[in-house]
Length: 176
Image (cartoon, rainbow, N blue to C red; front, side):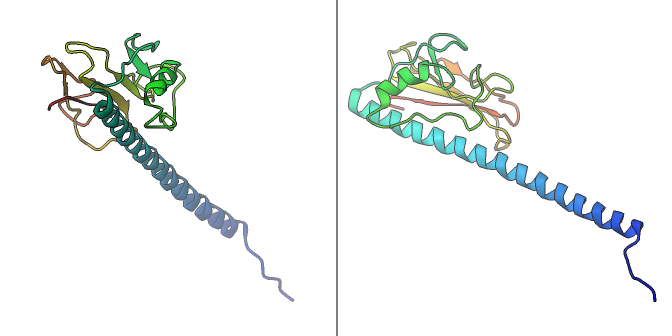
């Protein structure tokens, strides 16, 4: 009477195939998670911009920024108390200000390997008639960063202009 069983080689081949398929699945899942975080960032920034525009329509200026520890105290950054101060101005338009899905403990939107939203509008040049935001994507859209033009003509850009940039500088000014 012969008994049929798997040999050690057959078991190792099956285990190797399962390991390979698991690795492929995990890599695909991580890529999907990264894309989902970038999509959330873009949606957050879009909602934030809408709230800023409604605030501007009601008040004739953008809310002031200030109090951030990084890069300096004229910015508001989503990873420190300055974000709560900014929420005080925008509460009628947003119940909660968005934070980056992988929020870093410190730093600001243009720092390497830092994920945070940063907002600026303090009267530079023309008294809160414009604003800019800086944030970082993980994968990016393959586009270079674009400059934000302040109402006094100054240009600001914190990402790369010559090729794909993960750091994005966005903003507007009244009466574009």
